[in-house]
Amino acid sequence: MKILVTGGAGFIGGNFVHYMLKKYPNYEIFCLDKLTYAGNLSTLESVIDNPKFTFCKGDIADSKYIDKLFSENKFDIVVNFAAESHVDRSIENPQIFLHTNVIGTGVLMDACRKYGNIRYHQVSTDEVYGDLPLDRPDLFFTEETPIHTSSPYSSSKAGADLLVLAYYRTFGLPVTISRCSNNYGPYHFPEKLIPLMISRALANESLPVYGNGLNVRDWLYVEDHCRAIDLIIHKGKIGEVYNVGGHNEKSNIDIVKTILKLLGKNEDLITYVADRKGHDMRYAIDPTKIHNDLGWLPETKFEDGIKKTIDWYLNNQKWWKDIISGEYKDYYSKMYGNK
Ligand code: NAD
Ligand code: TYD
Image 1 (spheres, protein in one colour):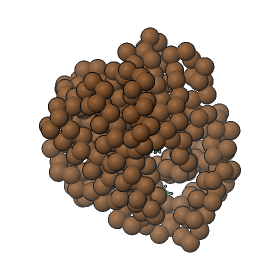
Image 2 (cartoon, rainbow, N blue to C red):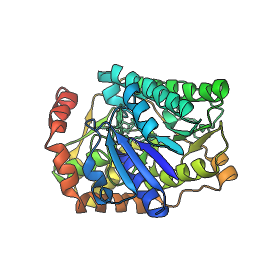
Image 3 (spheres, rainbow, N blue to C red):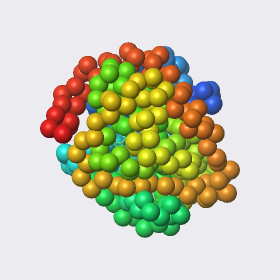
């Protein structure tokens, strides 16, 4: 089995590469990544010399490059993680999100069609469903919830999802889609809530909480997401969408306070800053379908996962300090300088 993992130098794709090489030592894992600001080869350092692993630098939206790659390699499955993934950046500069997330998805699927109707899996997000109100805890996103996006990021992901379903219906491309809630765990780029708060708290820097901090996200340990994708690509029904989430809703302020407590830091570090434009209030997944159809359940409880994650950031300071000392510093002052 030869699997192309795009975006494998990023957070979830990187975790997926490690997960698959460990679980299936006979599979060949081929990683294609453009190495944008979010891609980090050091995430793949421990597998770079593995004979079953190959890394290639390239853009999923570059049709010439992708055509050559597919003509030279016979992939059995393509799992597309490659994306621009940060909502705040999509508010600053939507165009690159359209390029990578929509055009890139189309280019990959065209190559899948051309080179033998290759099995294609799209890694999507619960953000395509928009948000839920805080005063209706009985509501959850199911696969039937209408697409209703808020940010350029979620709109570009929704556009890609629609394209994937169209390629199934129009061309019969064997596709699946997973829509997962917020992930956390090792190798998470320190612009996202949890790693940002851990790294800043360790440096005794202020922790910027948007608005009143009451927005809710449904957090899932990244390995549980990898296991869900593994199940879908092996046993999922073609043409189907699967929601992935673990009923683990937490407000942002609770997350930040938990991190401070586990690090033994003072809540004085919390600073309320201007809210994100169009900020989604609550995400909450109903994972009944993937549970009933594929037997998936999350294995890591939040209390354990957050401790493991903090330990990882404590034990791997070089990984994130190298990021922060680079381009990320400029990015940080640009995004938060006037807040
Ligand atoms: P990430 O930003 O950490 O990683 C994205 C990776 O894609 C990077 O390595 C980057 O270099 C690469 N990339 C970007 N543009 C590319 C291009 N044009 N060609 C090739 N490679 C390119 O993102 P992540 O958090 O790991 O998310 C991975 C996928 O999962 C995304 O599709 C995202 O929408 C989805 N997702 C993320 C979450 C989450 O909580 N992080 C939740 C649900 C779904
Ligand atoms: P984020 O990690 O960017 O993921 P997403 O927007 O895709 O859910 O943000 C998670 C939540 O944390 C979101 O409600 C915005 C909030 N947030 C802050 O309050 N402060 C921050 O500095 C960041 C990055 C996010």
